[in-house]
Length: 366
Image (cartoon, rainbow, N blue to C red; front, side, top):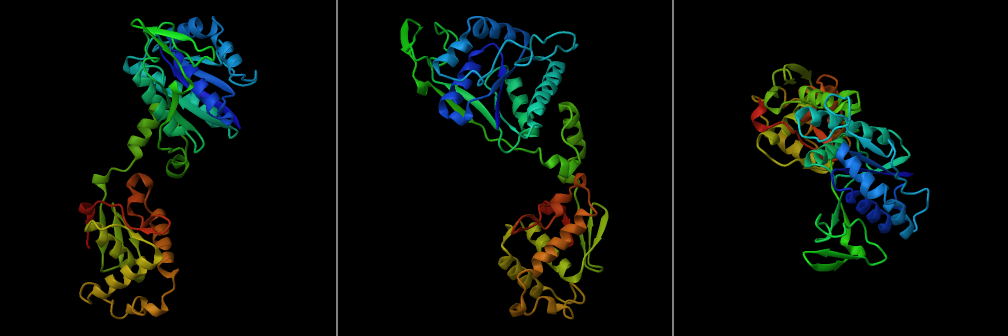
């Protein structure tokens, strides 16, 4: 598995050496194979001045005995990628306007896409450098395209070694026990001065093919697409029609069998009363039976005649109501599109957990 470290770099190139050092010294399996820096024009100049021209990177690799084929990072267009300016004619000097943000978002997302499309890579994305805007865009890009094995991280350096006023500037823990000065006080670094904070993030990459039949495109197009197609909860309506055993979901009619209707009615009734979801097939069976016993002939004509579906618990088939849940789900999924709030109306959202996610105020007919 190829380990790729993607770093955002603003005016503090040290965040790249610090992150690479932390990865290389924490576990041999996390040593990056290569480093990709996403920077602005001033960031690139500082990388060249502080990291490449003094050969600081090679010195760090030598001190840590990192093999030549690991932690590859050089002053090339491949390793150092510059966000384009708003007119796309040169390199961006900053990310400070709305147009800058849009271009930076697309640039960062495309960089993540390049490496996340390869099944033989694992990404560690560091949001430590650059403006807060860049950090936010990096985290969002990982939310859109990050996979289970990918990491979103922030590198932490213990004060005062993180101060830009420190002399000389701190880049990593040197084995030579280098001396640092700040406000006339002398400090020495230790290996524990650098640590990695893993940031939990939501991964929605796999939802795109299922919900939208596509993967994310450009950042702004993806934002517009989702905002237009994501369901709005205030517009969702569920109407239960007892006279013909049907559901009306946002104007679409779905016919159910008698046992399906009673089961779904029970779940809708619980949702309208704010009750917790049902866990397990045994509890589902008990709740359906208890609910059916309370239904009168006037409330649901034919309940007496068809009560055999629910009356004899000793004949209960553990698979019976689970299969009814599956059949209801297929009917809803075959009729309602995701953008119309389909998933809110499904009777189950996780294995062994039963209940609706429709807001109580959006349910009629219980």
